[in-house]
Length: 279
Ligand code: SPD
Image (tube, rainbow, N blue to C red; front, side):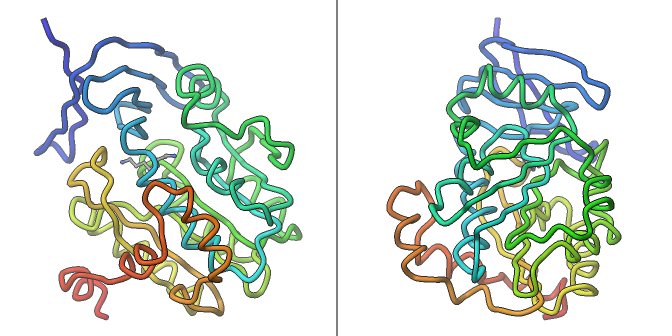
């Protein structure tokens, strides 16, 4: 008998993965956390029934969230990651030798515990001495740390439901902007422009009210419904298509997806997205 795990979207569509076994299932104060072993996607982290990341395609998500920002920010010594409890985002950040400190703020310790135990191939940088992992609420951290300054801020949240919903609030983005150095870069996951067009567009508007440079970019992540995913690059100054070549070449050498051409290509927006954003 085969067992399938389905994620359903808006009550009209579902993505199903054939499951070999459930490796972990637990409930924290915030959410239900599971790790399932699937036939097609390897081990998959699931939060409140939503697929978060998989061994099979996590690189497509994490490399795209991290490297466009990390190769364009003038300085990358101090990096803040909010969310990202599976460890994939900080792993990519810490591949950059210029990083001196990476503060990671994760609300739910259970996500990190489960990921450390069952997804060790994703979180390979937990022991890096430059990582400062703190289990606190990202909203509270941003409110309380207005004087802290970061060169790069990366937001690796869940969908805008459950405890991660507040990571899509304009006031939260404003707080993040306050923590960026003047020429700093923020990048965030900004949902599917197909399945979640309303969230995608609203997010762009919120960001545009705060940053003069707001550039969404797209890439494939098969685990996420429709397979088309978006991230957004924001800054008060600067330009996403002018990466620092030497930094980029070093990172591209050992990346599975990210390289110089991909960096340029992902910022090309199809007409349906341009029109939705009135570009
Ligand atoms: N639909 C799921 C969106 C999840 C985005 N964040 C994933 C976290 C991976 N580090």
